[in-house]
Length: 304
Image 1 (cartoon, rainbow, N blue to C red):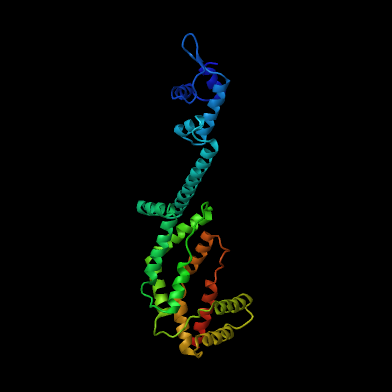
Image 2 (image 1 turned 90 degrees about the vertical axis):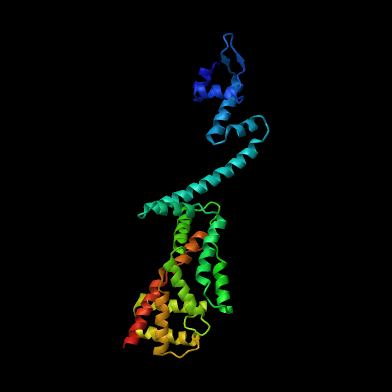
């Protein structure tokens, strides 16, 4: 067949087929008496193969290696699949950055920053988290409690999987932006300073079983509405005082009010919810509204 017939059969332009012939990818089988290129069935099969590999994104040098048996098709396909996976991950991250830009009034500098955040690798993601920890922990006094707390926080990484979902990428961008917010860092620094100050009496419980008990009691009272808020406050504060080794009374209650007002920071809770999404953990439910309800009820008892 001539080059025009080969073009009709494959859908490739004559110019492309001629180029493939010139570089040796699909050499003609012969020439006519007038010097025109002639191709046979083997040429057609070879050209279809080249066309398929090009559509998959392989460059001509790699295709030549396959055709010349310098590399097996299996090896090339595996390497190309890995490369495509990397491109897909990058595109997902870029798309997430564009979604973040679309949802706000954004300057060119904001766009550049979001693009860097979206495309950060694992090391860079961890660097952003570590720098955040350094900013909020640098002023905390050294003690066994503070060291245990910091170790626990640092043990959780923003570990996006190799093939993150859209939700995980969106969560990473939201987290990275939040970790850079100086007002958020300042709030956490003050929370840490108060919690671990060497001369401070224990106010906020650190035992997770206590915290769960408090939330359960508050949630039951808030949802059912069958008990007077003051009675719930008395029950909660009795256990709170016992856990802190204190006596329940106006002084402790005012300290608890101050501690809860400082801790009334939705982003602190959102931090763990985002970490759960990024790391594929079960969702973490919100409890901030529970503590807000208790804080209002506690203030009411002090105002009586």
